[in-house]
Image 1 (cartoon, rainbow, N blue to C red):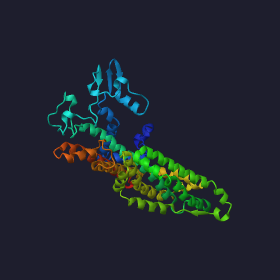
Image 2 (cartoon, rainbow, N blue to C red; image 1 turned 90 degrees about the vertical axis):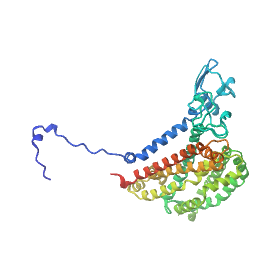
Image 3 (cartoon, helix red, strand yellow; image 1 turned 45 degrees about the horizontal axis):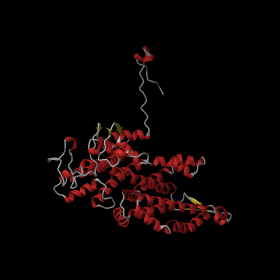
Length: 446
């Protein structure tokens, strides 16, 4: 190839010739982040979600009857931090502060939260729904109810701040459970397909013979214990369920320990293919056909003590199907790529290839499903709270505050603020999901 002639500047000053720098190399996730930042609406939605997370984490420091820091009878206390330690069993309240009425104590000096109320505090002087714009009977502007009160005199602003924690907790916990189940089942279905997973006939026969008695002794005979635990509290039910699952696993592990005995028979030593994709796909179709709302209502009918954890668990146990489908579709594409074939040629085990090489490259669509799933979980919790199902009556949530507005149609603030918070939160999560969809679209990367 013939070189171009040098310019006079290049001949006289060869050392000062300017060369164009190579284009910057971006990793996959940096490219996704750059594409996401182009969507300004999605970026501002993400910033709003970060603010919501901070409000949820700092709710006790923003709205609380207890001071953040105070000096009482010559001693310095931090009641908010002390409450955390007491709840964890790491400390106890001093005798002079045990069952104290915090708003009536005479402090040497005190630093209070912005809103000096808890959602459960009753202000009897401002009950029957006081508007944020009307006159309020308070000692000073420091004690004003900036968003009004409900029928019982509870501060709406405090309920909004602490309701943020409940809404985000339901979304995060339920979708974490859904993520765990969806990744497990979706990866098995997509990576192994109907012919990739093979086990010996001896192991298959033993597991088929043991699975029914193991299920009977682990869950069937312990049905009354599980039912009583569920009626008592969710934590006790979780412990009983964990014990039953452990018992089920011990039964199967004990039976599989005798596989080597049956493998001596040539017929039982041969391997058979397990149609994992077919089984999991049919199971996903069954789960999709179960209405989540009716399932929560049915469980609430047999539970004597409603709990938010039950709501989180049911939403998570029924909301994993979308994640599983995304992961399955992605792994069906990835499992035949060259680097997976190279890992197999090097002799790596299938599960190692799945966990370390295939699954990390299939997580991109999961982010989209998580964003929309969080919005759906928050909306479901708000609907249940509005209907008074599955959520303890003493728990103040955005949905329960909306439900109070039905009892007092003239209390516009009880409908406006919680309703707007639900609308804004669900919309921002959906906008983040749409932004991730555009950012992860390979046709948009240039």
